[in-house]
Each structure stands twice: as C-alpha cells, then as structure tokens.
Image 1: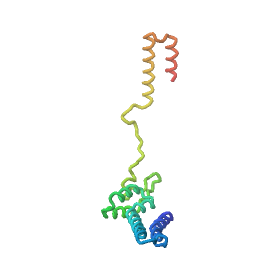
Image 2 (image 1 turned 30 degrees about the vertical axis):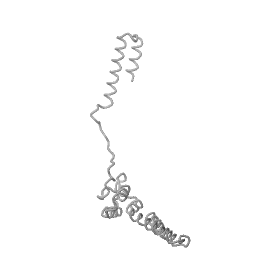
Image 3 (image 1 turned 120 degrees about the vertical axis):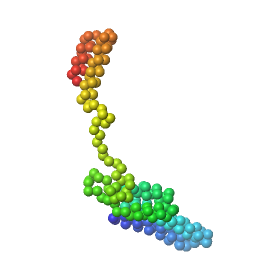
Image 4 (image 1 turned 180 degrees about the horizontal axis):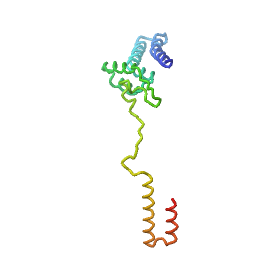
Length: 169
C-alpha cells in the first residue's frame, strides 16, 4: 500500500511541477512564452489523465497492466474504453489460496492471469515406454552388427567383442 501512495505522490508532482515552473518570473518573458508553457502543462496533465488507468494498474501490480496500457493508449479516446480500463485497474484482485496458483484470474476481469498452467504429459503420442525402446535399440544394433559380419566388413572376433558390449548394456 505504501508503494501505491508514493506513486500517487510522484504523479501529483509531475502535474504540479510544470504549473509551478510556468508561473515563475523566468518563464514570464513575454506572453507567447508563458502561453506555450501553459499549453505544455495542460498537455502534460491531459496525458496523465489519459493514461491514468494504466498508471493505477502498474502501481497496483495488476496482472493485466500491459493490456490496460495498450487499451488506454489505443482506444481511451472513446471515453467508454477509458472508463472500463479505470474500473478494471481498480478491480480488487483475487488472491489465490494455493501458493502455486495464479493471483487474479478467478475474479472475472483478469483475462490473461491464468493462461499458463502446469501440465504433466504421460505417454505423449502413444510412444512405447522407454524400457521397450532401449530393448528394441539393442536388437537393432545386433541386427546391424550381424549384417556387417555377413558383408565381411568385420571379422568373427570383432563381432563377438561388440556383441558382448551391446549385450552387457
């Protein structure tokens, strides 16, 4: 909660700072310069208000803060999207009782919080267990070794030595 209060304090200073600077005598050289400073201050205030839902979402650590930022930046000019994002940013987050669970997805508005789930695959694609695979692998090696002996590539002593190595594991 303290972190949230600090971010609001910085937001207030970001708005009040340019207004205070614009009112100082150094910026009051002529009417044109002070007019630009006031326009700049209003544009800064408008940008902060425009992105206020995203600022609140980031300050609260909302699970969908990036989505809220994109929606505010792209569609908040309609007003209804801005109001929806503001409500979404203030929406109370669901804190899961399960330590490995995801915080946020069960509350209804946190759309992307629970997309990732731990899944354990057992025998994917119907492959045989590893013990049978190792047995077939040894049989394949022995068949290739016998073919090498029949073709005359290796002699009988080499065949027996390699056969014993394959059979021993």
